[in-house]
Length: 270
Image (cartoon, rainbow, N blue to C red; front, side):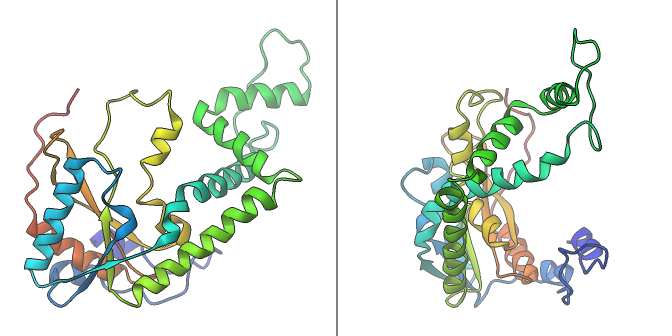
């Protein structure tokens, strides 16, 4: 909260920065009181498809908040089920566009192709991008380039942007009923290093809870809420608030942190 308050605010040199008052998140974190706070539990981000150990810890956190005086309200955000599909069209499209500047001529890494005397600009660019980008980055560039290509723009990128608008509307409707929203941060606990490398889709699905806020441009915070009964690994709960209402997150997050028992992790699982 201290760091947030120091770095928050308008930057006149950043065209994406909002010139708006910054709420005192430090004061909100110190307050940490949820009595009378309306907390919405998102119906679409719980239950089926979520690891039982994650769901049980989340349910316990919701109960702890209710016992502390919060008003728990179930809310529905039906467009959230399309969030992953929309995000993985919007985001790769932006990746493809933004990384086009890494051409090895004016910007970025330059690598000479092996075994070629007097390589052309195209050969240098290809060698540099091949060496400088990892597999996942390349995958996203290809996907984004396809989504933005002539003949597919409206069918893919255009449709994804429409879903993005629907998700933002779902958030607006939800915040007319509650002060903050609550969901698990991820549907499962962490997997072992390299376990899902060969299955990118399985990794993408882990973002199902956090993607809607990214698409709508809303603030969120993840709070540890204990260890899953079935894996013994940490579980997080995600709090979401309306734009520029970051103080609500710190108030509710600080309260939740005090209400749940999170043991100190002594050893990283291998």
